[in-house]
Image (cartoon, rainbow, N blue to C red; front, side, top):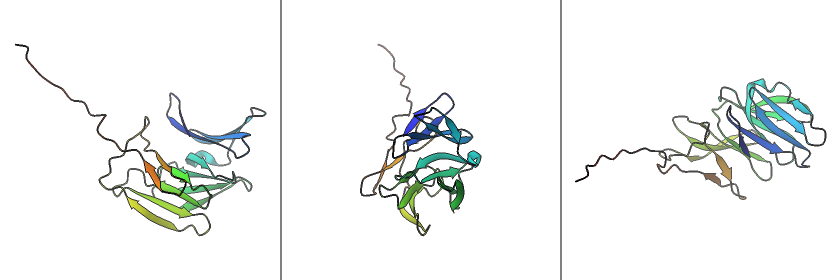
Length: 170
């Protein structure tokens, strides 16, 4: 889920039990308990952005702050690890939590990838060459998944272009 503040577009997610919310508050990732209203900072999250919580609540995937690698936080062990050194934009967990789908942001050869949590193998799924994506408020192209893992994208059909018409009244 995304929410907007005056600063920028942010991402948030609920833990499976509905007791906590994980969210991005530059330059940190935070978690708030809905029972106590206590806000805590995810350990060493100052180099991560755009968190996405796994369906079981055990992991948080995030892009590095420079967008050049995918990072994984183990909530139980409170430890970050590098998933892959690859440009990353929007991330999305598969429904079963076995894969993380992601785009490579605004790279020259835009594409959708997925990485297996067990083997950390990066798979190229589809090229986005010549696909004009809709960019959200703060420069973030959104991506979703269908229940079977097929990517969902928003296409820019030119609604943001401005035209001027000159005419003379007879």
